[in-house]
Image (cartoon, rainbow, N blue to C red; front, side, top):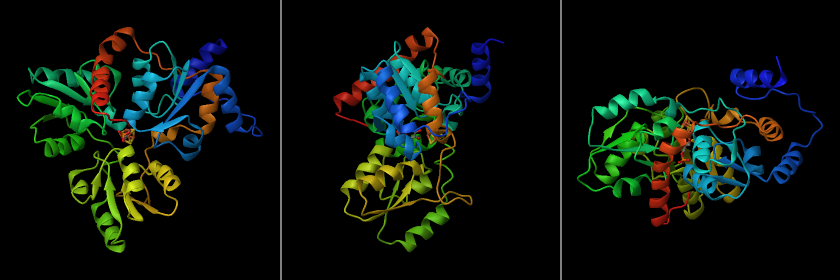
Length: 336
Ligand code: 13P
Ligand code: SF4
């Protein structure tokens, strides 16, 4: 086998290039050098481990990351996030090289809505506009009219005429929240995020009793019973801004615990308590997001692998729904 074939096989098996790294290397310094050398930008989601957040050029939620991927003049986008995010960046900047440190950094929500099944579902509801949460595959985006993120979902739904029936996919929890918030009766796909649906109502209730002055804040991917307890519901950026602007000094946070890093950095005098899941863990981590490590980030920048490659038809047919979302967000002055 040639070395290229070996590398390709390894990527297919493991999702990343498993090469030995000199343990004496200062990875922060090496990554900075590679960024300059290759005119690369590192975009990181708030759920990435803190070392990755600290070296990123931009940290944001799904909307902010898409806006940045669409506007950057870097030649290479290194996406420290999950697969659907890197695919979105590729669709928005098809002529740039888009890298993902671990190709197997997937998403349970995106996986819960396979495009062939969704196509049949859509056929059963003719005349409906399809709004898809950006947490879906590139192929699903080819079946979507408008994308949304948790920052702009309400505005996207409200931009659609009131008499126009809507299918919302794939997150049923966000869908239910939007039905309540906008008063629109939408057809919902039954998908969910493994991280946001395992918060324990019982443990959160006890935690709230022990911290009566704490604000309980939650991401709209959480189940309705959890959202019903929340003082504030918002996207990761929305939650972060709330903790900065609210005068409370204690917050119980129901989303992936990676966001606590920026909350603690922005408000070092405040206390942030991760909402506990329904298992033995004290905080809730996304196993897909956490597949990326500083080592994999370094290797992927050095060897420019794994790269996101999409068929041209997927880029052509999948991009329009993201452009519509970015357009509506810009008009509404929304940034992630
Ligand atoms: P936002 O980035 O829109 O807050 O969504 C959170 C999430 O689950 C990303 O995978
Ligand atoms: Fe997907 Fe949930 Fe992980 Fe976000 S937190 S990447 S929605 S599994």
